Length: 450
Image (cartoon, rainbow, N blue to C red):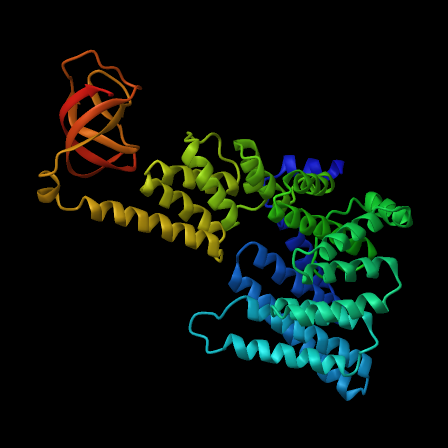
């Protein structure tokens, strides 16, 4: 999609920013039940994907209030079909609320939340047992509650009752997602992809191309959005299944197919960075979603083996990567400043709060370890040193830890900077080098590396 590529290159926004904007506009301008409900559910799911649980919880709560109000109105009107639909959505919103955890200071018990969601689902099916859509909603709710057996059974009912090709593809996706990594799940995912790419959807694909649609929603409204979202999510699920099995070539093929349709898909880009680690792949993944903890863990491992000096910083993803690199180099004060700046832009993000807390804990541990010079200067240590410059020598790393001498030092012998040497030394205490926590060291002897 040419327009999508232009957007990605010209702007530095996170991949989900566009969907957030679209859903917020939909909620602001619409008044009907379906638009309001799907808007808030989508906003909750998007906030969840960005690890913004407080904001996600607020959206799910609003969806629950809308569904509950619709239930009351439908019951008063004696409209059982409308009542069943509203009750199904209330169950789903309640289940999603359960998944966001309990806010600090709240008394809501997750088990009570799950019990209410289950009861609402059962109530809805009393009036809609012949509806494929209702069974699919029931299955989705049971999956959110981690009741796999019930999810599978309900999803099978939805598939058995449906004839419309697009809805059938959606319900098969739900069924496959409810199953473990079984041959049946794989075959269902494959069938959905083949179906959606078959000639029977040629006209729908032309509509997708004409409208340049690429938005991915969990509660898609309209055939175009449903088609794009279902194909994207099915390919991602199949790719993840292959990856868990160790069939990496098949997994990469599916991830590449996702990126071909949407070049900034955060899940696919993170997978590519995980499977084919490189600075380029990690930059693309972080620009799409800098709030993924699994992606952050993967980059921490990558940086440990590929230390680097950060280049130009334009995006939130660049800043998060910089903080990880600074932490790896022991530049804890600088890393804290970097993450704090990003956190001010995204004040409700749990990932940034976690990362900041981890960096602060590492700095505290470093300072505590070298806080008592009277004990440290009794210990004579030996390690591999690499000097930054010299002779004379003043700073560098000892076994990977930044250090400096109290003053430049010359040693007897032909020693050079930038090469491993053997240093015998005492630690005098903690210090800083250009904003990075480091050790203040007293050198005793320098030798060639053995």
